[in-house]
Length: 295
Ligand SMILES: Nc1ncnc2c1ncn2[C@@H]1O[C@H](COP(=O)(O)OP(=O)(O)OP(=O)(O)O)[C@@H](O)[C@H]1O
Ligand SMILES: [Mg+2]
Image (cartoon, rainbow, N blue to C red; front, side, top):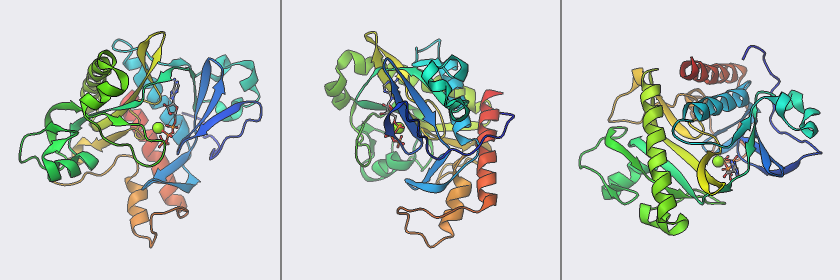
């Protein structure tokens, strides 16, 4: 990532068909393939902020590409290429914007279950545990503290809600959505990927507290799709600051969150502008994560 790229908040490619805009990515349809374009948009407290973060899209794409390749021995994935030179001709007129931030992927049939793996107890899982002693109907030992490492990683699927927040479901509910064989397979794959990634990241001083995978069916079998093990789909915590018994700082968004909490903002759209310094520090943070993980 030598060259500083221009900030891209929104893409608009008149000769390509936009399928959807997520909080961060713009998705285009190319028939059998799709373009997943990671913009530099940043969301905090579920609101997309008006400022972009330089290089964020490049970093997110590079992190996913790194993990897809690292997990190849365990699971096949949707990547065709991330090299803009190999994109179809119709994309070349947009190459300045597409380069480095875009994955050309095989279109798969996305499974209607999100595959969440948790190695540590945090977020919505911590809330459920405090209330019921369970996480997605899995009974956990008593006396766990917030952010504590679980005896072993657990698979806690959720539904993919088009609107609003995803809903946690039990493994049996996942079975009723995708069938027993597929549910069993994506559970095994998810745990295997998480374990391999978790060991790797820990060796680099990063805890992957939890993460979300998506699988799609391609040629009759599940492959890993979407993004994988990025700060947007995972909780990354710096190992050096980790202590159970409290919430942890987030590796990527803490600087922005801390700043936003000093403001009188109701956490609803539209979000506030960010000072130059906060933008620069956050950009640095993203680059740092990529460097730590992939070096
Ligand atoms: N290879 C693939 N084949 C088909 N669909 C895919 C593939 N890879 C990803 N997708 C789909 O593309 C969509 C990506 O959407 P995206 O994650 O950008 O937005 P979102 O999930 O609606 O919102 P958020 O920004 O909160 O993540 C998802 O619905 C995902 O299932
Ligand atoms: Mg998504």
